[in-house]
Image (cartoon, rainbow over all chains, first blue to last red):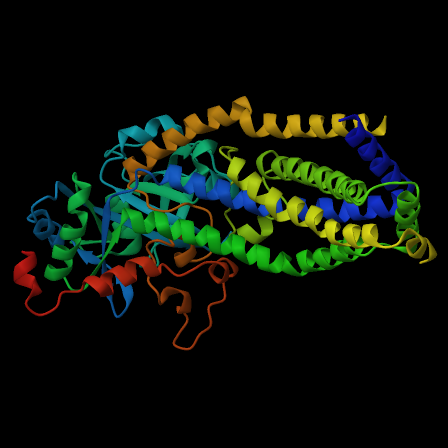
Length: 388
Length: 111
């Protein structure tokens, strides 16, 4: 034990003697681990967030497709779908997009006959009832971009060219931004007037199926009866988000791959070839009686010291970047051209597997790469090594 | 000894990392509770998508969009929204549909 500690001590002293080189590689290594860990932690957290929030998404959505595009669905489809054994309830959904010219933002307008009572705990304000046909509840993003508060008005230009005025009766709390940031809830009649939707039409239908084992059969039966519809099952929704975040993460990694490759070349060059001074040092050590195993251990400790410091520092910094500072560096990439973008807090949970994968991607290759030149130098004749 | 100083540094950094991973801050637990409320919101409003990318229909509701939406400006138009470029099309539901479209004679069997 004492012997290993002394070799480690010697390795640290050697790194300290070459401190400018050591610092340079440590800084580059740190930033590579930081960027890699930030992407891996961010994507993992976003996937978990999506899975948690969409856990109770409807089991089956039925859309009508016309000429390959989403089209209004006749509400009478709901009655026929309800006849299928195993279906408990079919609810039409009324939603659409509204482009707001003053801000250049897109909002999602949703129409409800009655405001669901469950949402009252998630809004700041009293909400509205059937006696207030031109009232609305808005998402935090809409309130911020239009500078709106409760009892303010939100003018909306309808499809018929008329200006309709909605009165704000509530704003969704900040905690629900990931779901409701751009949402505007209103009475169904107001929604239909604004979008000039024909009577008997809905955006899509939500099919409630109590027994999940029957979803496949019911979906097939719906397709048999209505060839013009597209069923979207809950598992497809969840898989879409999994694939979406995986794809985004992969693309970020692809963008970073140039930097990663440059670091790999740099690390290989630094670790895999011993300079004149280091080669002479190995020769002197051998002449003083060090074994081949001692020299290999020395080089392994050097590699371990650099890579473990860079790994721990990089992962801690990435953790703070993603979970404390809201992933500021990668936000523009996530944001795209969205005018209304939610402020959301990612949650650090169950990251052990991700951290282990970062460890095996960053520390292990670096330590291994130091072994080959160390072994080569260690088996060289001391006299020859000192003359290099 | 420099070795002991190094090992102490590694232990401290390892301890910080372990505490960050094993003991999430209290606000995270609060956030988790809010998350559960959000989940109720999903049920109440029958939501299917996250309100992250609002720039286009197919990025606001990726799970609900059709395969043609990104090319909305006309035949031959290139998809041009940054978020759309970084996302995958919702192929799962379209694959399922094409695989399960009824064949002649299958209608009776299913019913």
